[in-house]
Amino acid sequence: MFTQFSKGYYLGRLYVEPHDGEHAVLRRDQHERVNQELYATGEGVERLDSPLVMKLDQQHLSVHGDDGVPEGTLAVPDDLLESTSVENPPELKAVLLAKADRAAQLLQYQADHPGFGT
Image 1: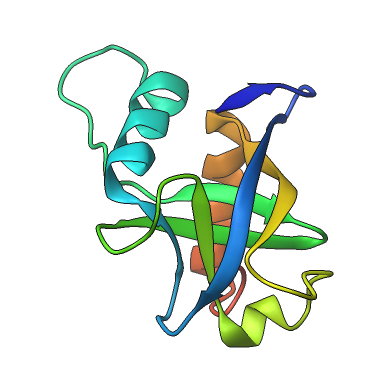
Image 2: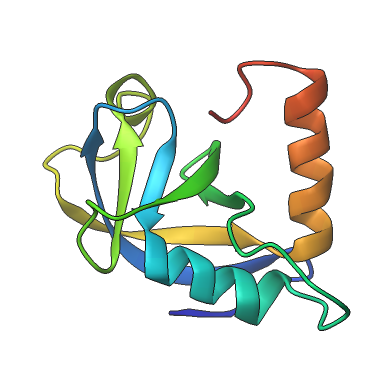
């Protein structure tokens, strides 16, 4: 689903559609698989429900798992979707996925600055 892109990101393509929830969401089984493959260290028991950090256009998003999302789809809250270049959803878009160390930095920033990348 994602391939090496740069020192800090993987690149993937997902359909992007509106979502009426508080957070951006990805199908739960895909979310857990990405967490396991790209974020897990292999040491001890690790959570597979931790948020992923994706970048759509210039917007960083904290992405959670949800059973009601179609496979290969990133569902984005309406207010956040308005600030992207998505014009006719669902639209296939390039999406960057932050690597584990970069994601940790961005999630810490989010904790320190509420409202960032919800």
